[in-house]
Image 1 (cartoon, rainbow, N blue to C red):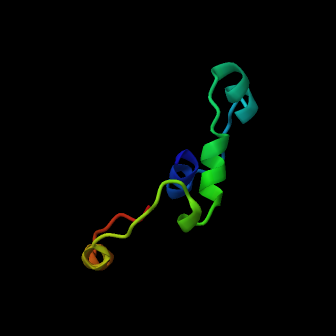
Image 2: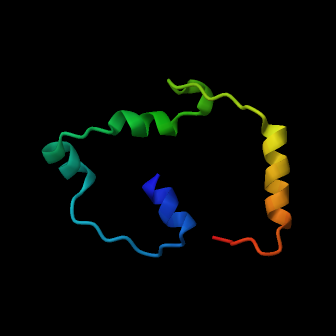
Length: 73
């Protein structure tokens, strides 16, 4: 999520001190399972994803697209 946010914000560089391994070793955070799940196709993930009200959402997106004063990230 943080990486995607950086992309949306057009961040060009990120500086960090601790590595992912440091987080695992010293922070007792182990997100390997998250990474494994995110690499799988939607249908193979443990948490199932179901589309809902896409037609209604597209209407909202089209209205946003047509806004003359919309903010482009």
